[in-house]
Image (cartoon, rainbow, N blue to C red):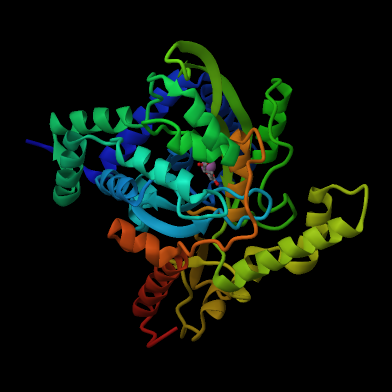
Length: 461
Ligand code: OOG
Ligand code: NI
């Protein structure tokens, strides 16, 4: 009996989820189609350089999704389902503190953590959990009713969870269990046809549209699925030309003369979809909800903590200059700030320790004594440096993306203290370690440096 290994389950899940989502949200298929056209054109235009941050095969299959759940118990179950797919929680994002919008959730991302697993299939899911104990959003009375409501629902059935545990333990599943697992797992993220309790939904919506999306219904759903594109500015233009109204900007770093770093994202607003409602008097009525949207992303080089803090400084500087001037676009100001504040070559980023790279000995290296530093090894042709791609998310961009389905501002009481949901709390609640993204990139870089040292018989580097 052949076992379907973890990575094949993950690839199949990403593919089946994509088919399901395209069926439910046809605009997603348009986004995928335009992304594929752009990618083909960029590979044609830029040749091998286009694939510096991932092969075209990986990028074509690459997606991230987003889901939202209500309780630590639900998040713990999500961790089991994704654990079966080799996806671990990485990073902690507190969207309650994000600049423009305040959303009552904390988040992590489930994704493969090893470079070879990422290369096989990098599927990741940004996963948010509601924070009912945060009194800035929820009164004690509403919190109590919300928690009772959430405790009474079941997002993932026992058969799915059993299969998930088995798949995680056995690093895969034989057929027909694998097919059954995939069917149940994809089914758990479909939009439910169950009528929505109008009054309950509206009460939560007054706090936050995201709170209603999570706690106003008895199921969860995938709320977007994001293809990766090699030229996001071109994608933005082509979508706009097709009459699809995108959010007003691309989130994250600007387009500039230097290398792509971190992550750039853009989205279109959630579409009104027909839904059934149960009115206060028990009657059933038709209506619409805007909960699912489309997003696309371009990935760049992962930054070190020093690089990231430089990035944060540049962001603040862009905000400051924008506030001081009129008539200039954010993109324009950002380019200026970036050109002054960040090295505009991979080499500059590397030499200043701002970005992560892997190092590989060159087969054709000179036959003299190798120099004793990495930079010299690269400069003198002993070793090649390849940038490590950023596999995670950005809190400020995520907050911007959440806006894609926020109709109202919601309400927040700023006179009370927030509650300290932090990474340690989240990790304890789901009973799993939450990986630190920097550690993962640094580990990959360090392993490659060690291998170079061993290969060249150098004691350390
Ligand atoms: C998640 C928003 C964050 C991203 O790509 O930054 C996100 C959500 O809307 O639930 O997906
Ligand atoms: Ni997203």
